[in-house]
Image (cartoon, rainbow, N blue to C red; front, side, top):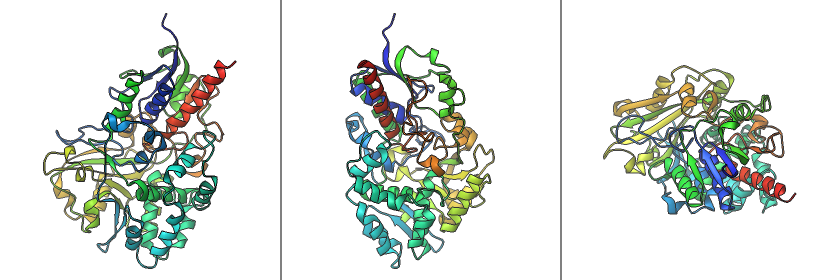
Length: 474
């Protein structure tokens, strides 16, 4: 009879792989089971359009990845992970042909917002510059997984970050600054008047100034492959093409760690209605493009930016978010777009490019947003459609089919709005544990939430380790 494993991880996304690595580093026997035929979850790279065009089905840009306290403690560069930085992390064009930018330099960013708001922006960021490593660890390790190393700095960040963004935007006199920061908040698909939305915008801005908004060479799959290779060197095992429908499908283990939605965890582990109050939020409608050349942006800045936000006013961005979260598909969507082949020519044949854009739509929406998305892109890049060789569209049903964690097309694995932005998956000081003493949750449905940073897996692994150590001491 085979010996009992210390831990089994269900789901080989970044959080599941991180949890597995953290446990294996502590000398525990770990096996990972993944339903798909490749590892990656929301960090994959595939040829979605034409041969030779390598796309990331989910995000391509990882502001919280390069600065992740979990990834930073792992030798992932040894396993092929290399971060590539565009000339500008992000650009935000306007209808007059100009653009605001989120640059590595605070001064350059501030200058792009105009003379009336440049000083306000510098003063907003100044207290937090140079503190990323400590702030990220303190902020992303909460709650109760580590005592803050700089409680004063964390409190200062919270003082600005906890109020809604609609409060913070009052500090700015012109809409250039309001719109650029509103776009940063919109990355978590939350209405601008939600609790802690100021903190979302501030965190993304600080990430750009401290570490940039880079992309992994070869695509997001490189992150997943590096984690997997490191795990195997630590003695862990990964099984793909293995769908788990109940706990009995898995080998005997002292702990079961789920990188899944709370809904799937409850179904597989027999926890009944344990997460019935958990809310899934608005969805994404994503289009991956194979292009015959670079996007013909009118403004200069977007032509050298890895990420381009499209939403020319804070009012337009706020309306699009309110519509998507309120059940209506926006006629004028706010878009987040990425240009991976600008910094990584290996992603497309010579002279060609990959590009993606996504807008926000209601949960489980079944319509087609393609025309609205492309009208918005053409607004700031006339002639864009003429460069399209092929497109691969994915609305909520397709996103959910690709990744079971994206329930109803919700790429955050649960609404990142209201109290659920901070207290995930329910109001508890122990979000990684369940009422089953051997079952744990490590997906982005737990703090600190969505993004490819592995911190939900890192924090969950600590909870597992403490539980096993406590059992051993009895």
